[in-house]
Image (cartoon, rainbow, N blue to C red; front, side):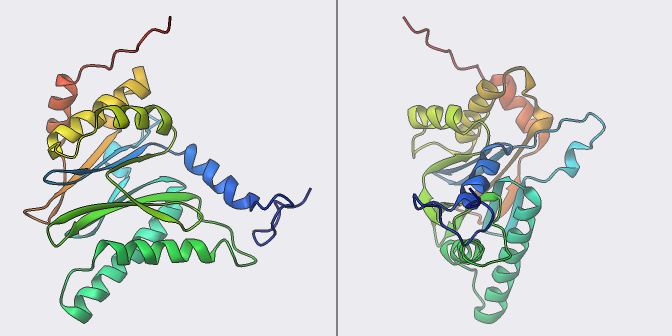
Length: 241
């Protein structure tokens, strides 16, 4: 009792309960997917618009860090905004200082270091957000996931948020490194449609990509999403005997 009241206090079984609560916050956040494709990096996110009076375009779930670098997140998005703005500043400082684009891992480590400090300092709380950071290093697309503990891993494809288990199952079965960005987008839309069911719609989807050849962060137009959603067939669920 009381071991969850301070971030610096370990429970008798060696757990930091405030950090575990932060991870639960991420699992309750809206879904975000990152994917390394044959021709670049893809981000797809569910904006989870629950009020018809909200302007869908005002809900931002995918951010540009630099021309060759982007990110998406799940959890407390106000926490994510602070981390993204820090990453944008670091990317611009690197460009001014060295006259070259920052590499992906430098941005990831900076975000992860700040998250880790907040698990070890009294009077702070952990960041309640996981961030997927992806970009092009030279001619190689790379994707990383950072969680509230400050740890990070490199992935070929990753999903965070409320539909993580269902969509991860689809990615394990159907993801292939040779998928193009458009094919990857169609796979992500199919997985989201299967997970969200009747709540799925184009208004909820935010999607962006960075092609290896161009190294320019771009968002998918709404008509492209509508076209691909129209071509998407729901995943057939296997009946258990």
